Image (tube, rainbow, N blue to C red; front, side):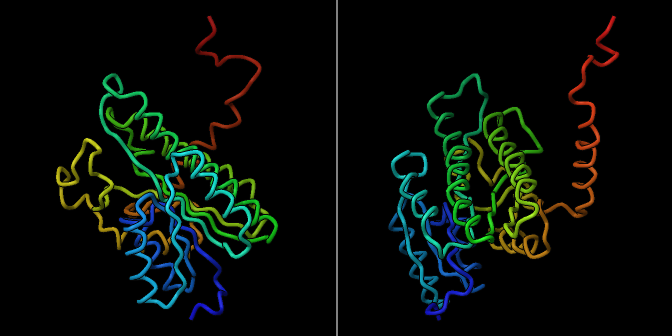
Length: 265
């Protein structure tokens, strides 16, 4: 099947488990060959073998720790130079929940590197090829906690809020092109993401927790519908439109020559 690669190669980070593995399966079934990126090569090999057997697509693995500058650079080079790449899913990420006053600074730095720096660098790298070819798709995984900020989520929510602003800026930058950029906002999803995070997924009511299969299927349905922002469990997308319209309504008054009246004596 993969001797003709009309859909191009889809690159998925964090592809060894959870949402990344489901994205890999779904995109292969849509006709993409795959490049799967994660730290754990044995798990990547297992995912790749299963998808190749089930879909007939070509599935390549690249074991890399995206928090390591040297290994990140290897992935960047592939994204920048491979003319077959047509889609990037920035799914790799992590979290640590807890009061910031008790946090390990090095652990927080690693979290920012993975959630912000690697996503930014990989997007920059893949855009080099997309702009040359005039097309491509980028899917950035944000989080419901970019909007629902909690006392224990200061760094995680901050990194995922960055993903939202970053994506919105890219959407404006690329508005006149055929390059698409989508932000996806999962809520609680039943994956290994929670292991070691400080919160167990079992602590949430069942009605709050989505399966990884449902989450990815909904995200891709949002992509197909042309949504720039896909909030997986939000019943009415106009709620987001209202939220964003309120933000935009403030823009004319965010930078003026005098302070607001309430700050003047």
